[in-house]
Structure formats: C-alpha cells, structure tokens
Image 1 (cartoon, rainbow, N blue to C red):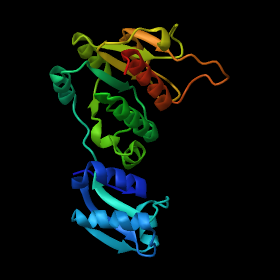
Image 2: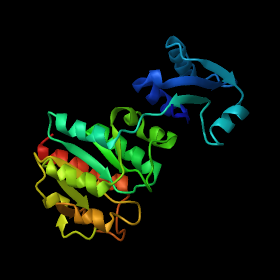
Image 3: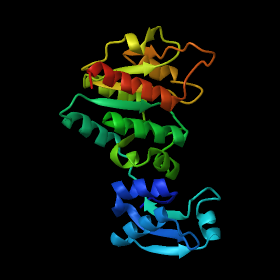
Image 4: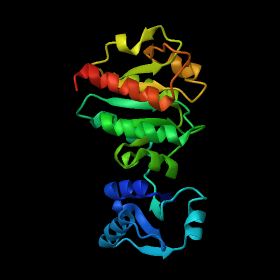
Length: 247
C-alpha cells in the first residue's frame, strides 16, 4: 500500500469527493474553528473516517512546514497502471482513442495540471515514462484536484516501443515541438485515434521520441517567450482537438 499525506482543505475535499475509501486517518487543528474545516470534519466523521485533533506543530511537521490550512490526511495514493493495462484499455475502448504522452516530464505540478486538463477534456489516459519522470505523488494529487483519481496514468518502461505498438493499433502519434513547421491550428485532427506527445521541461521531446511521431506540430509563439510551460501547452493542444471535433 502506497501511503502518503495530503494537506489543505481543497486537496482533502477533492480526494474525499472522489475516493473516500482511500482515507486512512485525518488530523485537524485543535485551535481552528472555521466553518469550512468543521463542515469537512463532519463529512469525514459521517463516512466513519478516523479523525484526530492535533496541535499546529504536529500538522506543520506532517506538511513539511507548508500551508496545511489546519488539516492533514493520510491516504492511499492512486495506483499507476501498467503497460499491459494500457494495451487492454486501448483494445477495449468503444470511443475514438485519445491519450496524452509525457516524455520524461519531471515536475509533479505539470503532471497534476495535465491530469486536471485531461479529466476536463475526456482524455482516456496519460502515459508516462518509468525513468526520469514524476509518478503519482501527494503534490500531483493536490494540483490535480481529484483528477488523479479519475484519469488513469500508465507507466511504461520503453516509450518508443509503446509508441510503435500504438501505431500498430492505428493510433496517430502527434508530437509537439517548437521546431516543427506545421501549426497545431492548421492540422486536421478531428475524428482521429490520437496520442499527443509532450516533451520534458526545458529539453523538450527526446530525438528518438520525435522520430517515432507520425507528425510534429507547434503552437505558434508571437512574443519574446520561446515556449509555453508543458502543462499549458498540453492544455492548448488537447482543447484544439476538442474544438475540431466540435465538442
């Protein structure tokens, strides 16, 4: 069991809404009396989740000195799915496949933000690499605001091998890079089985990953900044696909 601690009213509420069965125990600040915290405590107790009052010093220690807003929860983190589970998911999908691939993305804030966007857009899953990449962490769950529970994350050992297999399943692999000649906005992506590939922070997609994309596209940049944050770029691309689908 992969246990970790979540903190903050919003993060705990989001996890509680999606997966109350994952909660092990919750600690609440014994000095705080605000209505939001009391409401959350009542909800926890109604679900028979163990709660305990604690002083601020103890909560600060649990949250590593970060702002916990008077609440810390020990929870079982969402599971990361395997390559075999990814293959089963793709083979049994009744809808047009739509996946997001993150090539060595290491910042948990980016993975969390990508999960949140993926949930909102109905993406079927996010594929991450086993090495040199973030997995599901408390920070990911906090940023994702519940989406870590609703969007499956598939961890693969060999990304190129996975992309090859997906291509054999007639899924188009579309990579995002500022070096591409073609704009995402001038690319016909509607009604295509699709996997959007985003590169790591700073370095972008690895050269070998680019070689296994069917098409490379870019997001036009008109200012002085050369590129967008990976989670922002992923959101732009994902919603461009939805726009083209007319959804």
